[in-house]
Length: 528
Image (cartoon, rainbow, N blue to C red; front, side, top):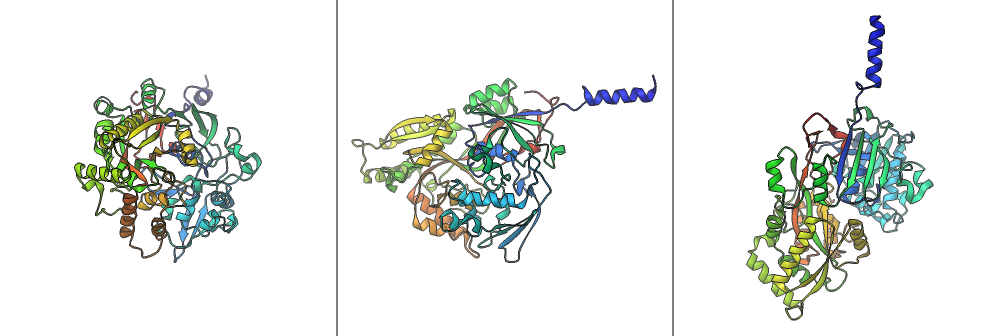
C-alpha cells in the first residue's frame, strides 16, 4: 500500500474511532434541590455550585483562592477609591449573542429592584454601590444605580465610599450578568432547560427536580478548549448514607459529606480519597425573634448558654468541627480576639446563668418552655436536633418537638417567618468578618431570625467608613449578638468529603464551592 495513503487512513481512524479523545463526565453530589438557577435569586450553596459552572461573573477564585479574571479581563480603580472600571473580554452567550457591559448593568439593577425579590439585594448596599440602598427601600429607581456601560465592553461602578475588598465581593452570583431579551421573553421560566442562556463554561442540558441537573460544555465560551470535563451531573442526594453507597458503587465521583460515625474508619481505609476542609461557615439554630416566646432575649440567651457545643462536635459529629461561642470564626482574616465570650465560662457557670435567665423569663419545671425545632432532612442534623432537645430537656426542663422537612420547605418557612426555632447555616461570601456579621442587619435578606436592633444597624452602617476601627466595631457587633442571642452558634464547619482518585485537580475551598472548570477525570488513575 502507498505509505501516504496508509498514514492518511491511520489519521482518519484516530479522529473518528478509538484514538479520538473520549468524552469525560463528572458526577457530583449536591445536598439538596436548588431553589433556582437564576443568579439574582439563588442564595444557598447547592444552587451556587451549579450557577458557578454555568455563569461567569466579572471575576472568580482559582484553586489557590486568588481572584482571577472572569468576564472582566482587566480593571482599575480611581485615586479616591470610589470608581471602578472593568474591561470585558470578548465572549458570547450560549445562544451566540455577545456579552456586553449592559448585561451586567441590567442584572445589577434587577438585583436591587424590590419587584425582583432578590434575597441578596442587600449585598450591593454592602458593596456601597451608589444608590443601592435607596433603590432597595423604594426611594429611588433602579436606573439610579451606580453601574453604567461606558461602551459594549466597559463597565463602570460608582461607590458611595471606598471598599478595599470589593474584588473579593464580586464572586457572588447576584452580580452575574443576565442574557439580553431572555427574561423579558420567558419570565420566571427563563431558567428552564432549552430556555436558559448562560455565559459560563457550561450550559444547562437537563433538570429533573429532586434527581439531578445535567450540564454540558458551552460551545460559545472562550475557554471551552481548556475544559477537561465535557459534561457534569449534580445529583440531588440529601442523605449522606445514600451518597456514600452510590460513591462506593461508582455512581458518584465526589460527595459533599460522609455518613455520621464513619470519619475515623474512612481515615484508615480511604486516606487518599477523604478530604477535610475548614470552612468559613457556621451551623446555628435561629430563633424567630418576631414572635413570642422568642421575642424575649432572656429565653434565647438561656437556651444558647445551656447548649453543650463540645458534646455536639466531639460525640455527635467527631469530624474536627470547632465549637462556636461567637458567630464569626476566630480564624477568619481580620477577626480580633473577643475579650468576653461564653466559651471562656466553665460549663457550670454557663448552666447556672442559663437557669437563672430561664426562671427570670417565667419558666420552670412546673411551667416548661415548649417549642418546635425545625431542621432539614439529614442524618447528621437529625442527630444534632435530638441531642439539642435532650440537652435542653435535661438542663432546663424545656419540652421540644422535632420537625424535619426538605430544605426548600425550610427556606419557605424562613421567608414566611413561620417557625419557632430552626436549624440554619451561613458560609461567608468572602474572607472578612463583614461577610458574617452583616447578615444580621435589619435590611439583610439573609437575616433568618428576623433580628432587629437599632444599635446593631448603626454599627453596620459604619463598616465601610474610612478610618473606622474595625477591630472595635467587630467586637461590639459580636457583643450585641451574644447579649441578644438571636441565634445559638453551634460549630464552625469542616467539610469532609470523598473524592475519587479518578478526579484530578480537586482543591480545598473554604466556601465549599469547587468549580468544575478546574477539574479533570482520568479513568486510568486509581479506582473507587
